[in-house]
Image (cartoon, rainbow, N blue to C red):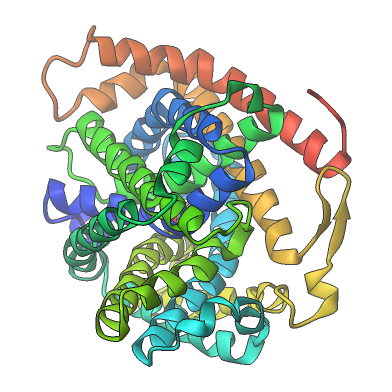
Length: 459
Ligand code: TRP
């Protein structure tokens, strides 16, 4: 049965593909601007806490459910005998569709910037607003991006997804380290580092907490069953705990490095760190320009190319979730499922394409009591990333601990590793999945919704 569904060719293949899913625009584009919007280092501290204490055990749980059942998120709950819970899987599949619909637009920006850097158009940083409001051009870039994603997913698990991740991830790391070193040599770099690394704990508020939580779930690709799906292709020889640890460390590591790169650059250019979604797109072209015409073009285009690749290994995982659902549950052929779902999601993404200045309606979509006037893309981001993902994490934890039951979860985790039973890690996972995660995720989910969508002042 497994041989037909596909399987990762090796543990490192799985880890790289899952890390490829985790590492993406969330780390390099979103993390720095979230830090900037939420007061700097204090946000980073809360974020790290959530990643390691809450998210890591949830990741182990998702992978275990996937490996146990060899199924997509909807089929997984059914396979364990809990048909009603498959609604959680359906929520996850829908969430993947929504996230991919706008993620692909931002990926289109990254790809477009790659082309601008090749022709040495460093002025594009100042024209970010005009660039993103040109819906036709961005639409073409996004269509190319979705097409490439579909092409990789259509090739299947090990030949497509795994091979791409193995080459691209390490290259990205090298180029970012180069930019970190360069950033440190610039004037005002220290101020940027201070903002990023010296926490002012009085800045921790409810908004900081739920934004950090949403960011952690988004960045680690948790809460919608992406890792149930990736876990479903994992062989039972492999160690889930150490794989999840590697994935988490890689993801957090890249986000932290992205911050080390961005804040010195932002401060050295005298740009406000609260620049929001435009932060890297406004800041970086000027930096590349300062490297001189040759080096600037080389480093600038490489950076945005690799950013596009990082986004690609993430869009691949987002598309894989609805595709695995359509293949397993609806009996569709893989190729057919891939291309029709990719096309559908592209269409669903059109409002996001228009939400950055092209159309007034989508750009001023809704007045949120907790936030103010909000464009459509930001709005569905709040909904999917900050609300549904933590909700999904809550539900998967409650399911694993109380419905499927802890002993079955631990039994599955223990396969493929020695000395799991009774270890510190097993106790930590136990307490988190059954107590800490349900409580914190449940509370923060409710408060997020009340605060952001109903304007209730909770703290
Ligand atoms: N984690 C990716 C990023 O940081 C985005 C992503 C891919 C994702 N797959 C996901 C987010 C599944 C949530 C769920 O860019």
